[in-house]
Image 1 (spheres, rainbow, N blue to C red):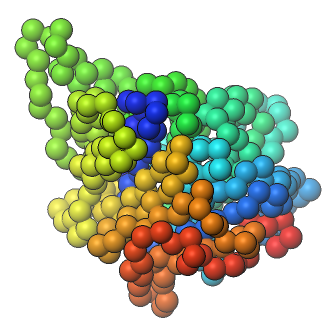
Image 2: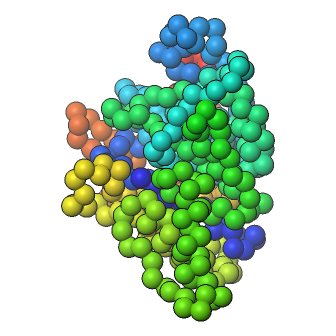
Image 3: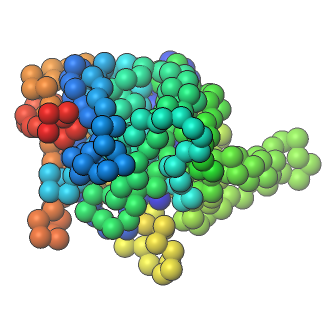
Length: 350
């Protein structure tokens, strides 16, 4: 389960905060990518399958990016969250009920679901471009498992830009369902976003001064709809930020209020309720990307306006795994100089 908040209350200072919740620890790394990299839509195993014979395709990244990757070289990598050089922020969240198979007679281009975020960051600079691209329904997402897990990657996508707009993309019922606008600031996991907005109307009325008996109560539970309403309540009661620091702090505070503590007990039979492993913060205009590990006291960040690695692809491990044991590495501050050259996990040449 995850929570995402896009703070666009002041168009001069736009920030996105996101929680990553999962039932077990996950190997996690920061990657930096230059533009001009050729990437493939499918991994080697998928490309060899009969149904994808001669259907693998490539793209060349138009923009550089910084991305949080889940997984490792052994299990493969999933692009979970990131920002590109145009200030576009993209992340995927768990979405129960997702069905990637599209109905229709088109010849769709397959795209590994774990590469969805990277494809968006490589190719688009605004939320409107993402909206228009997926409204055409030319790409069919291909399901695979979360790296190092037996759980399928059932995901929906949120994208926000430095103009203050958001696009949310979900896939079910044989087609894409897309929401685009400035009003879609909060997102969690389930139910689908259309239903979530309908549920939200009840709470918006409860908090509305036009209601003769307004209520300021909010759901306190860890379920997705609880977190959606709690984040919505706090977001809609924020003052207008006066600086980028205000905007970042507000977004971080709201998602922290919607997080699930490490070691949460009492929800057997509800595997979707999982602890918050880490949070990311993105400054759309200053092009700074922050990573906050729940198991370490420090915050690290990459400043895309400062000196970046010369390597086309560089990485920094933040959570490593060996023989089932996890190590949370305790870096602090700007980590541009800590990024080390590495191979592109999505390279078309691999």
